[in-house]
Length: 143
Image (tube, rainbow, N blue to C red; front, side, top):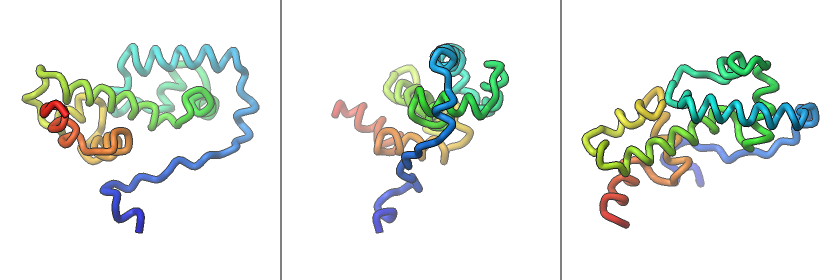
């Protein structure tokens, strides 16, 4: 019954006690953390819908499973959630910036790095609790 109230199929995050977390070396994880932020955020790779965890691991010269473990331990989420978090932040900026008022929701989603409208709306709703157009309308009304 609870799922009927939610417009998007969003599952609650399940906490896992994974063995791989004990294999992570703190120094290497800290170094990778900084490099992940540099690539994903500073280089704005989150805007590329084709940029995958596999490609990030290749760019960082590490293996995808280890990268996944580091992202889980350092960011508390998986690669997709991490990237979507930055995409939603970017979309929020565009939705509230007067320079982007002429852009459609789909254009903003694509510019933020989402592959399609559905993934944009689902990630935005998961992060903000409302659809992008509702967020924009509320912000423009000053509420």
